Image 1 (spheres, rainbow over the protein chains, first blue to last red):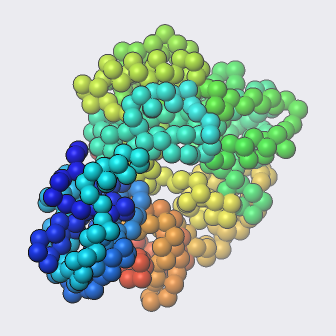
Image 2 (cartoon, rainbow over the protein chains, first blue to last red; image 1 turned 180 degrees about the vertical axis):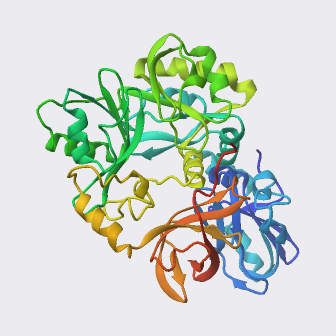
Image 3 (tube, one colour; image 1 turned 90 degrees about the horizontal axis):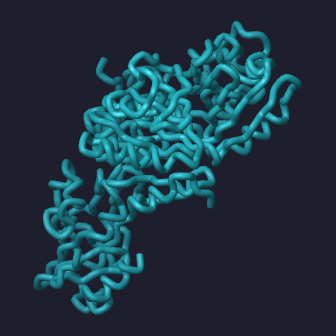
Length: 127
Length: 361
């Protein structure tokens, strides 16, 4: 799957969609494929202050627990509650209904350290 | 890293490979949940060639093996298979195994991770009248598991599969190749295990898949196998059975034959049964959506009581999260409420009877 062009990416295989001062975060198609069948996600609490590259939760497949990092800092404003009963949405549609959480950006300048779609493509192709 | 005779098939199918028991083995093909579903409703094909295979020959095998194991070997009928456990003097498990009694020899299948240890153990206790041959990595082992196993395998085998009883075996030909077929498995479903020379394994594997893919036969990895065995209440060495966790603690009292003459571990196990005060493996169902994982602490009455030994989402147990835990007797009683600590938060769980899943009669 090609990387959506309207997103920015982290080396930890998260994406963020910047919309004004709001960021929407998820994991990439490469990440969901590597993890396999996702059965559970643990997301940060609404209102939590999170810092760029900080551990904010977990994504669990049948076999493994993987840490979830946030690609940008901010205050969590919303989490994808539908994943509680349908974590497999992250496998089906990682850039759409499988989004994880939204936050109010603390520092718009942080996005400079994130990867472009083309740069992320290179990283994920190397595995 | 060693490779099984089917390694090329796994690579060609783009399976995800991981190190296991010294071999590079497929953990999944299409996905653990899809493979699990195939085994429960149609059939799945597993490469188990990493497991240790020893051939035992000689008039003394039965008596010798009865001194080393907790279940009865000498009472096995020709063509019978039987689960058994080799213990240490304290009653802990060296390995859990299956003996297959053939007309002129015995097959002993041991866990891959224990194959070297078991080979040394058998040789250290070797007696006149017993000859051992190590076929680990040379003989292949393919399992077909699932309700359609008979239907899919019968056209390619020259014995009547539906007449073969559970935990019996037969010398046969599969696709014309010499094989031992056994009605055994580790999934909780009907199925067969096929012992063949490694040279013939790729052809049998690919022929079965090609001919029966349309009926839903799926290649399956160790990931699905672990979920299937946990649902079916079967112990996995290193988890529910270890050098420290005895078969009695693991709920395998049925396999312990205290009426046998002396065998390694007998006194310790008999005393444990008598006292009945030991920590034991309990089945848990989690109350919430968070999976319990190996090593997570378990609390009973607010106090730390034990730890999770295996845990998984269980599609055949209402999509709940199930687990095993080693718990004191009072906490391990069916119906007891306990808590599992997951990343610092305690989550409710209930002790339930195992197996978690039984196939429809």
